[in-house]
Amino acid sequence: MSISEENEKIRVLVVEPFERPYVKEISSSLEELQSWVGGYIEAIYPFEDPVALICNEEGKMEDLPLNRGLYTDEGDLYDIISGRFLITGITEDSFGSLSEELTRKYEKLYHDPEVFLRIDNRVQAFNLYDARKARELSLQAIYLCEFSGYAADEKNKPANREIRYMESLLTGEDMELYHDLKEIETRYPDDAREASRLLRKIEEFYSRRNMDRLEIYQMSEDNRGLAAHRFEPYDWNLAHGFTFGEDNYTCVYRGAMKDESLEDIYVRFNLIHPKSFRGHSLSVSDVVVIRKDGKERAYYVEPIGFKELEGFRKEPEKAHVKSKKYVLER
Image (cartoon, rainbow, N blue to C red; front, top):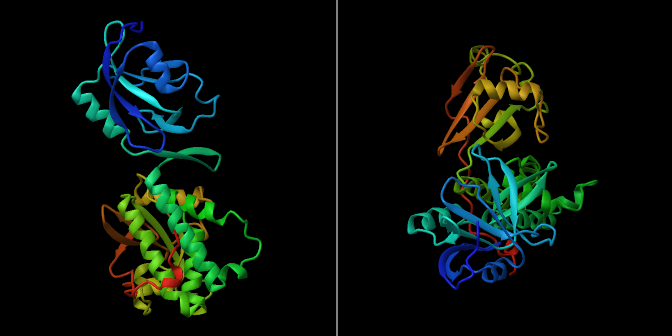
């Protein structure tokens, strides 16, 4: 495709790292396009629409900031554009103006900036604003640990607790963070209410992201009174006076819900345990809690299949006004 040498003006969408895109009218000349991307241009055509993505050919080699990801039809990340790039229309022999319809479409596609993190040796993309909120929640959790004295009790913990907390909130695999806050809630009465409040804020964070959630509960092995009920079917436990409530269980896994059935979950937690899983293989008497489309359901694992439970989750206490000692200074 040739590039216009005239000073023809075209309407383009400008996509900056860490910013929302905006529309600009620029010259279609080679010099102008190079100035906008900061070097030699490369035009790629990853979409079916008649549009071009113009970026810096050496963006990665020049270590320009990572900007937006490119994805397969299945939603898998396969490349990342570095530095500022443009979305333009295309004509028979050159770059042209974007139509109003395509401008709206690609402004929506690239509306939210992305950040990229390497987690478990795989680069993953996240919404920038989600990442900022995850970092804020992580810092609040760290300050609470330090203030309560809980962090001092934890030996052999790596120094990058903030990064681990943040990554766990973004992926939903937050067992370490959940465990730490639950420990404060249980062991430090003066700070228990703040730990409960922060746990609720974390659930609100997931809800705002429309993240479906999966939790797995197993009977506490520390409670000897539960030994007779562990691994028994629902009807047997019901006949022997067992209370099917959260108080008799310990959460051993929290994560993002995948597109899977209860049977898929059973197979997954018998064959491939996630790294953050803290229990035994999914068995009879365990409880699977699914939060999907704003609704929560609990299921008791039976010898064959699952039985839905009513009232498994206890209602959380309402928190008082936030104490000033936990407010982050900005």
